Image (cartoon, rainbow, N blue to C red; front, side, top):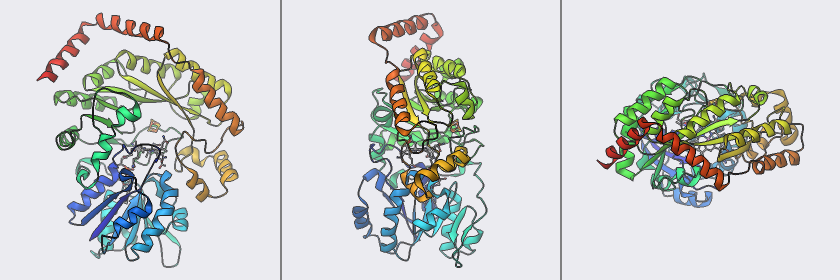
Length: 476
Ligand code: B12
Ligand code: SF4
C-alpha cells in the first residue's frame, strides 16, 4: 500500500531541532512491511499548509495518511486535515500521538477516520493490514478509536505497551530531512551549551517514567523500558558516519529513573570508547557522586532537572516526591562534577503564593544556579492535574469548550489556565519578578566559583587521572 506520513509543524518560533522519533520508527516498520512509504516533514521544512498540499499533489493514489503529534498540534491539525481530506478523498486518515487523548473532541472537529492511542508501532501496522484487506476488522485492532456506522464513536481495548523495545527498528532517518534537525544543534542553540560540536541528534534509550508528578502526562506508561545499549550505540554509530553527528540529546523522560540501569548505560558508553558530549533529563533523586562521575566520563555535559519549586508544600502538592534539600544536593553534585545543571521551575499550581515563589527564588540564589526557567503550570489533557475539579472548572470558565482549550494549548511559557487565587496579571508579574529576582552571579562570584571548583579538582587525583585517560583515549 501507499502510505504517506506527515510530521506537522510544531513550535514555529523555534528552529526545528527534534527528530520525530515516534513517527520515524513507524516509518521504518512500514518499510519493513513492504509498503511504499512517503514522508512529508512539514516541521523540518517549515512550509505552509498550501505549499505542502501543492507538493503532495505529485503523489498519486495514497491509501493511508498517518499524521499526528503532541496535543499542542491540535489547532494546526484542525486547519491542515480538511485540506488533506479534500485532496485525498479515498485515503484513510489516521491520527496518532498525544493529540488523540480525547477522541470525541477530535472526531467532532477534525475529519480523520481513525485515532491511534498510545504507542503506535503495532497499532498502525495492524490497522494498515486491516485497511489493506489482509483480514480482520478494525474493531479487533487494539488502541484505536473511530466513528461507527451508527455515528457513535468506538474505542477499542487499550494497546499494551511494548516491553521489548529492541524489536523496533531504528527510525527511518533517510526518509526524513534529518540533516535539518541535526545541524540546528539543539544543545548549542536551544539548551545553550556550546561545547564546540556541530551536529546534535535527539534520540531515546528508554521509554516511560515510574514517577507520578501530577502535571505530567506519561503516555509511555509507568514501567520504564530500555533499549539495549548496543542498539543505541549502533544508532549513534550510524548517525555519526552517515550525518556527521557529534553530540546527542537523550530525550528520555528520566535518564536516571533506575540508578542501576543508568550506571550500566554510562559504563557501556565508556567501554564503547565513544564518549561524545550528551545532554538529558534527570531526576534529583537517584543522583549521587558516583553516578555523576560516571555520567561525566561517559560524555554528559549537562542535565535538565525539573526542580519545579523551592517550597516543600508545593512539591508535595505536585506529588514530586522530592524535597528542596534533595534537589539542592543533586544540583550541587552536578555542579561539582562539571555537569551543567539546567533547572526548570513551575509557577501557578493550585495553592501557589508569593511566599512559595519566593522560596523558589531563594533556592536558586542559594544554589547559585546559572540556567533556570520559570514555566506556567499547564494542565495538559491526560495528566492527573487535568482531572482535578478545580482545574476542570477553570478550563470551563475560561474556554467554554474542550475544542477551544485544546486550540489554545502551546508552550508552557504562556499562561493558559490560572489555577491560583491571583489575577492573570498578578501571576504573570510574579513570574517576571521571580526571573528578575534571581540576580545572575557577577564576575566575582563566577571567579570564586571557578577557584572553588579548581581547588576541589586539585585535591582529587582520581579526577586528574580520568581527565588524562579521556584525553589520551580521544587522541587515539
Ligand atoms: C521530544 C519531545 C518534544 C519535541 C517534539 C517531538 C515531536 N515532534 O513529537 C519538542 C521539543 C518540540 C517538544 C515540545 C513540547 N513538549 Co514534548 N516531549 C518530547 C519527549 C521528551 C519525547 C517524545 C518522544 O520522542 N517520545 C518517544 C516516541 C517514540 O514517542 P512519541 O513521539 O510519543 O510517538 C509515539 C506515539 O505518540 C505514537 N505516535 C506519534 N505520532 C504518531 C503518528 C501516527 C500517524 C501514529 C499512528 C502514531 C503516532 O506512536 C509513536 C511510537 O510509539 C516527551 C517525553 C517522552 N520522553 O516521551 C515530551 C512530551 C511529549 N512533551 C510534552 C510537552 C508538555 C511539551 C511542551 C508542551 C512543553 C513545553 N515546554 O512547552 C512542548 C510543546 C510546545 C508546542 N508549542 O507545541 C508532554 C506531552 C504533552 C501532550 N499531552 O501531548 C510530554 C509527554 C512530556 C511530559 N511527560 O509531560 N516535545
Ligand atoms: S515530570 Fe519527570 S519525573 Fe515527573 S512523572 Fe514526568 S517524566 Fe517522570
